[in-house]
Length: 131
Image (cartoon, rainbow, N blue to C red; front, side):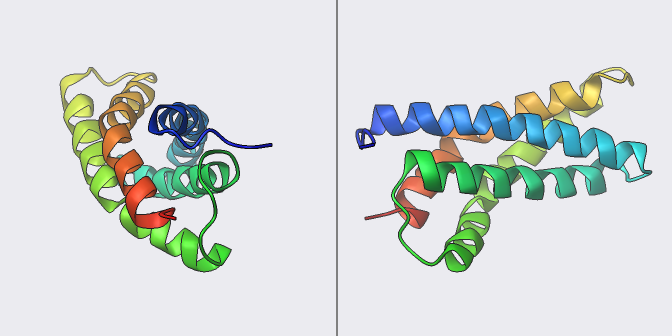
């Protein structure tokens, strides 16, 4: 199957992978919280799980793999640092504004993921999966 290499097609697939990654993110976060992790420690663990998931999905469906899987995964995680910073900043801000409720971490993850989407796409396209 030939992938659409146009930026709009890539962004669409990247966003879909990100949506599934957000589900992974939330599932791992709630599991970590249930096991006693704090809001920040649980979030760092869940972000690592989600970033690993989206790397694999984007490698397969969005971009053309450009390096060995191990190197590419490490480069992907490093390049997501900007998006992660935006994501975690918005996550913390939203958590501080919402009441303490079971749904608050999930809402904060969703807001953070949306905020980091464009930064992460540009990083993935031009730093990790460049042709």
